[in-house]
Image (cartoon, rainbow, N blue to C red; front, top):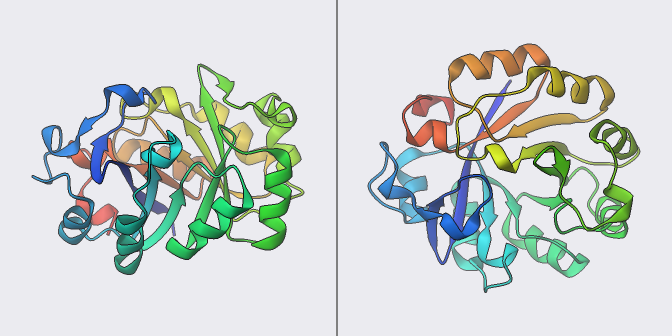
Length: 232
């Protein structure tokens, strides 16, 4: 079954509207949303009842505190995958106390962490290939590869889901690059999820045809382009 995973970008205890990865410009989601009148994460989950959520703890990602308490409470209500900007096994262990699975992103992770995390938590680590401006966003030399080569390298790791996160498309509803995604699917042994750019149900149909496992969505839900029953 194709997964439509609802994204909660949480900053200082509030859900914010993420646009293009430009975190300094994020504002409370209720100022944008057509489906909720609050930016409180727990109230949003109670109102929209998503079956699966992707949580980005923007405080941890920006080294400005954390949202651990609210993340834990969301985990009591919905299946969760958590991106807390893991850069160490301590981060990975902590994340597994709060969520069903952890996201390790190229933006913050090292190759050594990938090896350790997938060895300790096989099939419970989601690897995010963070892309901005067509380039993989990473400080790790081992990840500074053309996307297809990185996809092929990751085939040897016991990863749960592989996420293609196009940061420059997040919050834009700007559409998808099916040719690029088809190449990713053709060269990967893992299930692939897409984050960024999905604008409507037609895009969902195209991604199903390409062979993706699912999508991460927020803007298309909040602007009404995707009906709520698609995330429930």
